[in-house]
Amino acid sequence: DTRISIWEESDRDNLQTRLDDIRRNNAFEVVKPSEVDARLVDFGVESGEFRQGDSVGATAVVENTGNTEHTFFVGYSVIGPDGDYYDNNEETGRTVTLDPGEQRSVSLEWVAEDIAPTGDYDAQAVIWKESDRNSLQTRLDEDRRNEAFRIAATTGTVTGIVVDSSGEPLSDATVRIDSESTMTDSSGQFTLSDISSGEHTLVSTAPGYTQTTVSLPFQSGPVFYRTLLSPN
Image (cartoon, rainbow, N blue to C red; front, top):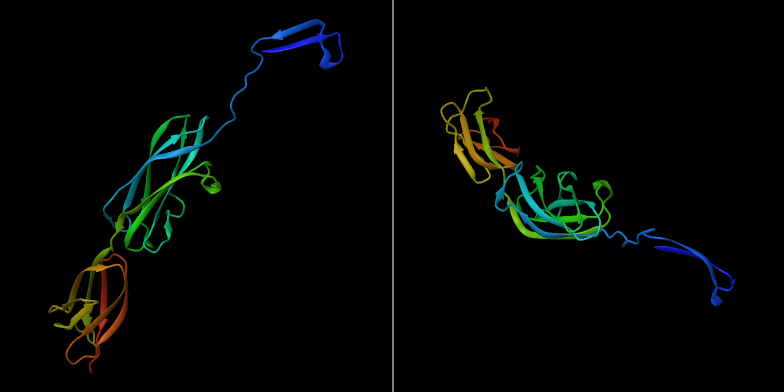
């Protein structure tokens, strides 16, 4: 409420005679200043072994611990065995709008990138005060799960043919990729399975011919490779 009075005296320290006054009920309201805050109640990550291209899901339970409705950004990133952070080029994470005291489960996702190395990964969720992913400044809470999941090497099949300098297939030639080896069949063809993605060396040999060694960049296959052997 508010009240206005008129006094005969002019000295505010010696007011005695009230001449008139007026009062207004419920004139205004005093409220607490807005407080924006939140906490991570729980954070869980899919466990197990994944390969490049797989989706690794997570769930973050977020609570608005402030006194006003607010839209938060929930960030999600993973940390590889090389210590680098991966977030699909800043595409992981999402916003959530909560009333004071409200809790909500937020589904998150990271897709294993082609550049992600194999090994054990940590996962991290962060609640940001800002809702725009391009303007994140105020970190309100975070949680991290160590060795949450593992990225395994992507494997595939390498097939090919070994021929001589005239283009004729060579049977019983030995073809080796790292520790895996096989022999060519009567048509000069070969198959090597379970080859992991990455840089490899393909070595081809046959009696009476010069060994050939070539670099073989391999992603996921299948790959067909033609090898030429020259006579000694």
